[in-house]
Image (cartoon, rainbow, N blue to C red; front, side, top):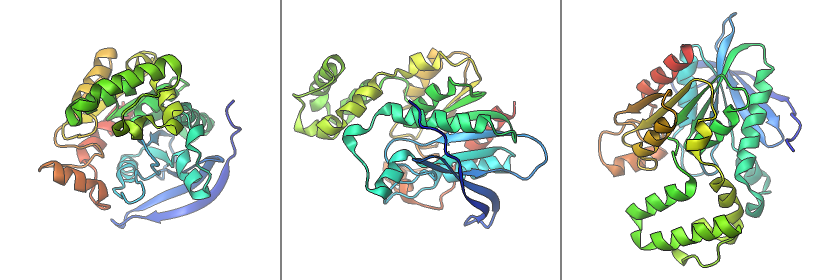
Length: 309
């Protein structure tokens, strides 16, 4: 059962970025586990709102994790603000749980993230300042957003979202990075799907199949992005970068094939966190921890044009 909405105004004021630009910001707590930042351009007109859902791991509202500060979601939100689009971006629940020292891996379910995204959507559907509500889901947040958007969003944007079930994505990654583990991974996923538990996994796959996170992986496996995206009867935009070393362009192609009427954009030289990469994988990896590297303007323009239609 969804938790009741608890709306607490924590802060209202002005935020100045490193670029000295000023943003009207409102920090909100939507549920006891979901805190985020709303930025709304100053205007007397109703504006579209984009809800930004982060990727996998303990990702905060700015797109950062511990020891990794790239501000990808923050810069995306600020870029949309410059184009008269309001945004709400939020910390994943695990961020607050980590601060409270209340994380229990055994209890985490993929559906929790969907519940959180729907709670955010439902809250802003009642906010009369906004003309339409769009969901932007990044990486793991793409699938979360696809499912959440089925509950009354006006449009959806997938950024670097997988086009197949998570077990198939992991097997594809292992094929490229650790081919010796592929067959054991396939067998373990089959056991997990059939029995809800996998016991005979290789030690090399412990980060995926250790007992405490198997329930999370199992619930994640229940959702096929290709199936879920066909349920959307709203405008859809699918974006990927051709320098993404985490989610291949082929994943975006699968989503496009499943949803032929979706808009589709592959951005040249953009990596997984929306940064421009002209060099090799080392440059790509380093970009994940450069706090002031901007996101690509082409991404801002593409998303803004889609929302403005």
